[in-house]
Image (cartoon, rainbow, N blue to C red; front, side, top):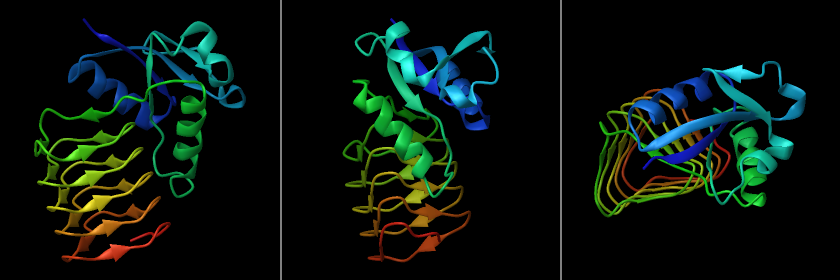
Length: 187
């Protein structure tokens, strides 16, 4: 039986998330949600777009999970704020891990994470909440990616690294072993 999902967002990442959740997960996307001031359309993919401020009246947290599909806008602050809004409403946030990603069995993955295809997540890795790993990254053994980070494509994080909260690592960023990055960095 499918798990029911609401996607927060109605932009490009929300549309991409819809594709992946619909065609490579056990979730059924039931609606999209945006803040009232950004509500420009009433449907996307023939599904309703509802106001985030009152989402729980139509889609109760006991029956639906949420994924916040916002990119690295404002150094991940927008995605983080909306993630905190849905958590305060009592929702469980879903994570997506591509069937074409390699994630070692003892890696820890938080909630509201999105791990695209061709990612390698090695043993003993810890990935916090609200983290996006775009396609083709390597996360080395015993590394830690803290909450609210965004790693774009083809990033290499070698072993024993610690990536601070709310960091953005751009395309082809490479970190040698045992590198620690403080929070709020752009690499």
